[in-house]
Length: 139
Ligand SMILES: [Zn+2]
Ligand SMILES: [Zn+2]
Image (cartoon, rainbow, N blue to C red; front, side, top):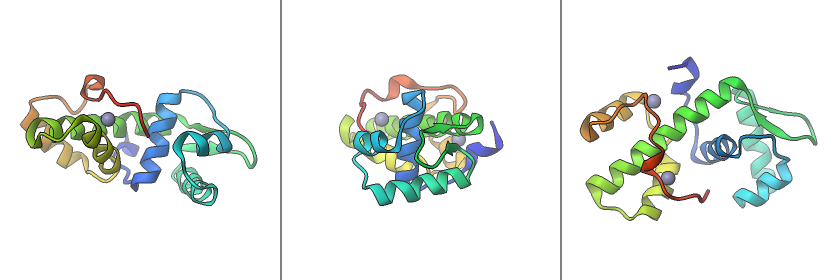
């Protein structure tokens, strides 16, 4: 996996990164704010931090998009979300919606080492993408 894959993000940074991963194109911050229901000033500081980590490009007053490295990290962290979500549903019997919300919050903060341990428990691969583990589309 890429060197960026292990990056630690807080839950709102991960939320933005995952959103951009599924959105698949550039988006204006104003639209991003509406899609994610995040306050303007909060979003600006999240975007500044993501830009510092080289996962997005963001021209002042212009659209935001993932860098190549950002796309790799976003795909990897999205998969962490999927694996955590499956684990919460399978082992703790947490409902789909709550498991999704919790997994989205946790995905940026779980190390690959911890994800590997969950994968061993679930008998799935950390390196395969698991879209079927999540049926929610809410950020
Ligand atoms: Zn989910
Ligand atoms: Zn990982």
